[in-house]
Length: 327
Image 1 (cartoon, rainbow, N blue to C red):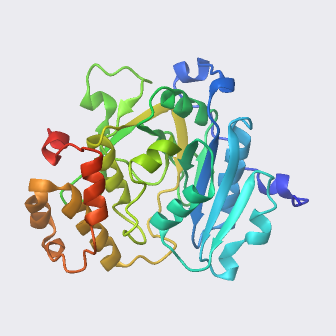
Image 2 (tube, rainbow, N blue to C red):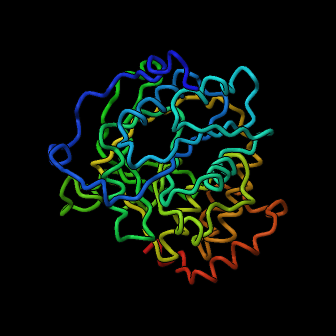
């Protein structure tokens, strides 16, 4: 049963139009596009931000393309679960509760296992998806079974989240400390670039992406021995590019995201470090020393865990070397 005030709860401030003119003029044949499941883990999140995220998805997504929005309650305390409200926002909103906190990485994998749509979209719980955000992503996925696509990430100011701010369209990378960073614009990287064409993303920025379910499965999902939060996006980027796939940003797809000064939930440094160690041991090859120079503490691999399954995956997919990726 939908809440009597569900329509009011799903209201959000529509961003002012700021997409490139060519994007506004573009049309899509949605009848030939695959359907998607949108997966959103949340922990200690604001109900208002959750409602705005869901509201923008309902309002700005063609209903013929959207199977469900699956909200993963990652072991929230009662005052941050919001189950009775979220389950009644809209018929396409589904809810799953993890009895204990799994962490962002495992929560996303749980969501993927619980859905069946041919395309998986991972989203975050403090976003506003813009007009026609999904069609450009699906259009790009057509005929590209091993492609991961991401929208251009715009900004929702933390103190004034209804003031959507358009970004320039940056590409992502990472330093030898294995921390993501925005490096520059597509034009700065390639002077022949023509906006708003899609452009390569050497590294995913985090948890907002779309990909074929078959490639999610075939390419190894996430490393199921990584815990909590961190490095899964770098691992997925290295694995995708080096194992036959690619990652692209699609400027006609825009999503506003709130970048916070402080996380609403605790993160344990030992979990983050262990995740990095797993990336180093499976993927960094002869570049390990560069990481150890930047972060000497990562050299101790005593808590690494078993990496045999990830090494076997790398062998099975016949992945390229780190030299190939860097050069």
